[in-house]
Every structure is written in structure tokens, then in C-alpha cells.
Length: 283
Image (tube, rainbow, N blue to C red; front, side, top):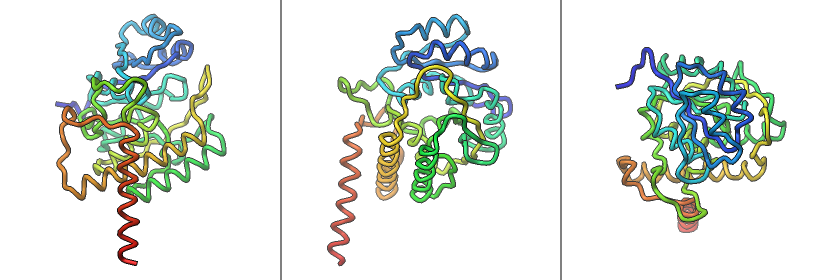
């Protein structure tokens, strides 16, 4: 049973060649937190650096590729009452974690970080990315009836007992060589927002200031990532409609068949074609 008055916090940190950044980031995280580092095959000494800085850190190796799989592995390994999603590049301010925890203790199920609500901000986002994010969260709000002010931000926290609601790919499910399952990639943050919204959990936005990455270059690509988020929104909306229309009880995670990006895209295309056919018949 979760301790909702004095919860234990697990901080899940996906990494891929972040040794230099971890030397700045890990000392800022409280020793009261369980730290779960999920590594994607770093070759720069990330794991050694983490163990040197924090002897109590738990090291997990992700089972497939992608940030989504890394987070899913971390969610499964975490033992705390609250899970905090935390980037290793220095962009997340560790001092804000109590703010997320307070929102959850006050009654939220999902504390969603926002750079664009009052008190939030960013030292890293470009005007083009800001405009794109604004358009994307407008689409999300229209499709899911939400009031998000910031869709594409990965600093979030939620109660650990809600992990099954996310219905993520089973971590020990092998993917085809070189292929990730739906939810394994950078679409994970959008998927989490969509699935919590569809599940009607209590969502509260928490103001957060995004810091600049300390070392290295971001893997974000404005246009390709923007289209990926848009595709994710449409695909997740189709998924939600299918579940509602068929009144399907959410299955156990172990029973879910693995689906790839292509599978989900075909489902979205089939649904779109059904709409077109219906319009032609009624025209």
C-alpha cells in the first residue's frame, strides 16, 4: 500500500553517454530519494561515474532501444510511492522535485511539469520550438479535452500504482532486430499525457523552469520530432476511441501483444478510411 502522507520518492533517470552531466546532476539529488538510473548502452563511463558519485544508486540496463523503453524499465524497477521522470542532461532542476511531490500529496494523480504556466520558463527552448509546442498542445487539448499548457516536456511525476494505466510495452518483450515497439521512443512523453488524460486521472500542472543542457547536444529535431508528436496524438486518439467503442476492459500488461509504430499507423489509417467511406455514403 502506498504511503500518501509521507511518500518515498523514486527518481528515474534515463541515460545514454551522460557521464559529464551526471557529475553535476547527481550531487543535487537528495539522499532521501531512490535513484534509478536506466542506461541505454553508454560508452563514456556513465555507469562508473554514477556509482562513483552516488554509491546508493540503482543501475538498470534497458531491454530495448529508446527513451520510452528506458523509462518503462525504470518504472518497473522503482519501489517508491512516487515516480519522478528526470532527465540526466542538467535541464531538470532537482530543487523542483518537492513541488511535484506536494502536488501529488495534495490530491493529484499526475503532476505534469509546464514551462508555460505561471512560474514556469525555459533557458533552452527556441522561438520555433515554442510555437510548435503551442500548436501541438492545442491539438492535444482538442482531441482529449485537456487544458495542457505544455505538451512536450518530460519533467513529470505520478503515483507508482498508476503505472499499469499507462499500458506500456512489457519490458521483457523482445522487439525485432533494429525495431522499437510503440512507446519505446521519444513519443513516450506524449503517450503518457494522452493515456493519463484518457483515464481521467487527476492532473495538475506544476510550473517548472527548464535549464540549459550542461554538456553535449540535444537529440531533438524540431520538424521531425514535431511531426512525430502529431502522429502520436492522432494514433493515441484512435486507440482511445477503439477502447471506448468496444467497451474493452483494460487488459493485464502481460497479455498485450507487442505493436510497432507501423502497426499503430495502419490502425490509424484504417480508421481514417472508415470515416471517408461513411462520408461518401451519406453525401
